[in-house]
Length: 383
Image 1 (cartoon, rainbow, N blue to C red):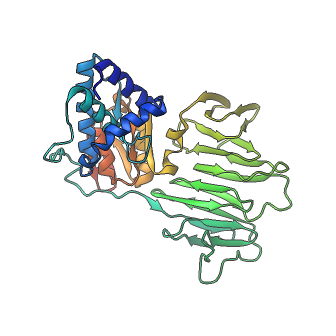
Image 2: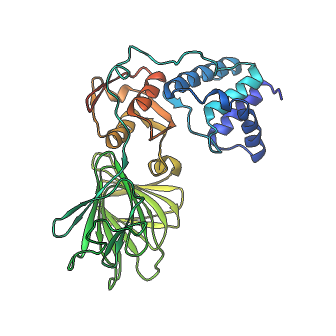
Image 3: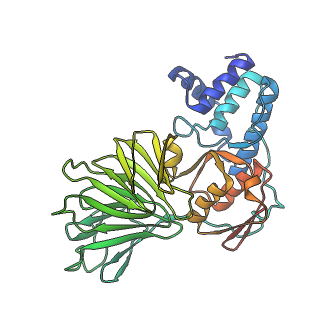
């Protein structure tokens, strides 16, 4: 099928924004099938550079221009598994312009880059600790899927005990603190059946039982995604950094890291009430409440960019480099040092797997901007 340049560009833009009809999605995916075998051996950096070349080619032929303020990392925006915006864009370009961008014979990697010439850093993984009230610290297995806490029991989600001594809490223990270090994430099931995914460098204070209480209350530092078990008689409350989030049963994410400018509560399902002193706000699905200086502001957001970490990706939408690198710092357990003013650096949009080594994401950022990185042990320097 051949279409004119303007129609192809409009189709590509709608695909990028997630506004294609099912028929248009099917058309792009059919084109993609012809390319699927050609990009399997490409590196992240190679795909990033080719995506920029592709965008420039399309802009040149359609009269559109690359956004100079926001760099798009065209990777991982697929509508069906394995379909990326890069491949879909290449499919459109191939059909319309007769160009083929996946036949580069050599990997496109800057061999002079400090990223290539230093030791790489592996991504984070499953891991956490539980600290009991008596001070005992239990290190959780990275091979297990999660932990169940409650009714005086403490076991892995597959039913196996946390230690050879068994799966019961010591007598008199009434609470536990679940904590992830940098480079760790873990899933917890609370006494009422609520599921919590704890992001890196986060802490959750959990009672061993909600029995005999009018509310189900926990405390959070850092970030967590919640799927709260419904209980109309006992609201579920998450206290974090001066605010409380009150729900009856719903799905939501709270980002309450101390190094973030505000506390963000994002709703996916149901409704929640945010309470901070005299300020109150109710948010609906697709909305985010931002709390700072005793004020709560509510706005629409793309929830996929908020819960990306739970789904194993980094997703950015016009996001500053400093915000991106704060996430990188937590997941890869690295220190970030800026050699130049970070406020003058571009923003980015795109998606990258959290399973990549740190060089993968850094090279992608390098290949699509003028920013340069140097890895020195567990420190990343930004130029």
